[in-house]
Image 1 (cartoon, one colour):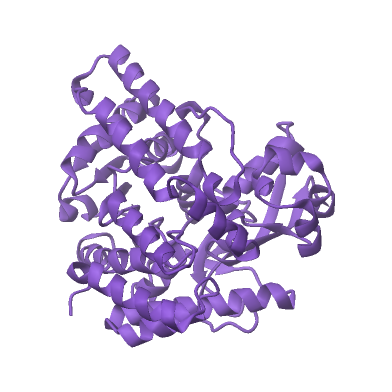
Image 2 (cartoon, rainbow, N blue to C red; image 1 turned 180 degrees about the vertical axis):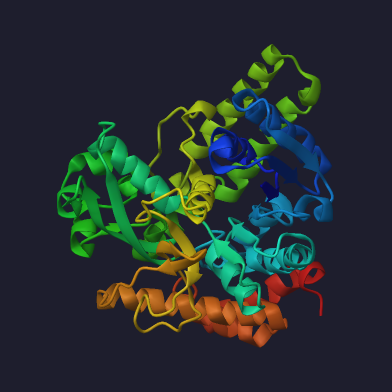
Length: 456
C-alpha cells in the first residue's frame, strides 16, 4: 500500500513520518512518498522526516519528490497539509483582520477566509490529479486549515473522497487520559460533535463510566490540559468539555484585546520561529549526515518546536503551556486519525468511538443539512465514515454551530464562484465579524490579496 503526503516539507512532517513508520508494517504500508513544491523545505524537513522514519523502520520505502503526479500515482491514501502563500501570507491575513477591528486568527477568525481562498484552489488541482492517477478507492485526509471549510468546498465540488482531520479532539483525549487514565489497562473515550475548531466533547468514559461531570469540576483538568484557557465557571455553565478554539467565541473581547496589545501576532511568532529553525538547519546536509549529525538536527528541531507549541494561544489567552516536546513523545497527532481510518478499513481495528472526522452530516446533528460538513465522532461501515447520531443538542450550542455553518457554506460558495458579494454575506454571518462595513473591507482586501490563487 502506498501513502502520500502532499506538503511533506512542512514543519510537522517529522511527527507525521514517525507515526507512519511506527505502524507501517502493522497496516501494510509498503511505500511512503512525501511531496512538496518547496524544494528547500523538502530538503530540510522532508529529508529529516525521512531519516527519522528510517530509524524507526529501516526497510520502509520512503521517498521525496516535488512532482505531484509521481506523488499521487497509485496511492491508496493521501494526507494533504499545505500552506499556500507561506507564513507571511498568514501574517498579512491576521493583520488585515485586526486593522478592521476583528479577531485575526487564521482558522476561527476572519483570516481563515483568506487562507481558504488560497488553499481551496490549490487542493482542487491536487484532487484532479488524484482522481486521474491515484487508486480508484483512494481516501484523502485534509489537515490543511481551515479544515472544515476546505472540506466543505472540496465536497461541494464533487470530491467525495475527501475527509477533514484535526488533532484538537484527539489531543484533548490524550491530555485527559494522562490525568485520568494513567494505567495501561485503563480505557478512555469520548463523543465529539460540532464543526472543525468549534466542537464539543461529551460522554467522556473511563473504563465504562461517564466522568464528564467529575472532570469539569476537577482543578487538575484546568492545570494539566487545554481547559487551562477557560474559567472553570464557564465550563461548568457549558456542561461539557469545549474544543480549545471555542475560546474565541466565548471570550471574543478578551481575545481581541490580548492580540492587539501583544507585540506580535500568533502568525508573526510562528513565522519568526520557522525562520530561525530553518536558518539553523539550512547548513546541514541532512540526507548524507551521520547519525550523530541527525541527532544534532533533531535537537535543533525539538528546541524550536517546543517554543512554537508553548506559545500556542498564549497571545490570545495570556496562558502559556510549559512542556518540552521531543519526537519520541509523538502519539499520533493528526496522522493518528488517518492511520486509525486505515486500520478500521482493513478490518483489524474495532474501537471507533474516538475516530473524529470532518464528514457530511447526514442527519447526525438535527437542524443541519445532510451535506453540511461537521466534525464528529464516526463509525466506519463498508469503507465509509458514518457519523454518530446525536439527537437533541443544547440549543445554545446548536445556534453557534448553525451560524458558523452558514458562514462556511456561504464562504465555500464565494470562493468556488469567485463571488465577492457572497463573501460579504459570509463574513457578515461570521460571529466574530458580524459587521457590514468590516465584512465589505475584508472581502475586498482578501480578494485583492489572493487574486493570483482564485483568478477570475
